[in-house]
Length: 188
Image 1: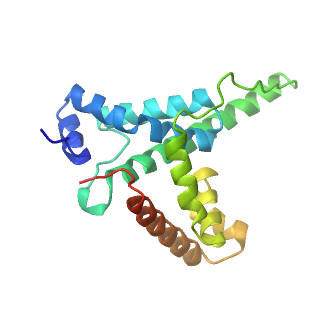
Image 2: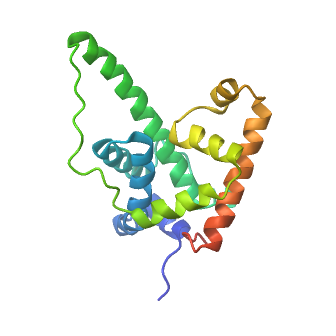
């Protein structure tokens, strides 16, 4: 029996199939965690984001709907993860300001486990990003890992918005091609 595609599992989840959700969770938990961790630099926050993404997927709310013809399922899932990470970062910034106002001593304790569990996928992504020209690497880092909007990147880098959009689009295309060549995840 062949392994179900991401799209088939997604359709089953839309029909409330818990086994399909579990299969997708097992397939993507490490990738989503490592992606969220790289943005958040916080193990607990990355786990919270990952759980939030799967809850949205299960409930069919807040994640939009995946359209197979628009791109890979994994890319769609990473976009949801990116947005959830940015939302949590913004929420935490508001809470930190409130905390700092109450207590001027704000300690940051390093987590016991600061190691990302999925080193292989993280290394694959890092190697793929390293193959990009410098300006595309910068766009990807600012957009995905620092959570800046394309407009904010244009202002920060003092370049036209269209240039930012073009560089991000080209970088994503090159990353997709590189990861496909190296045997990244497959979506059918």
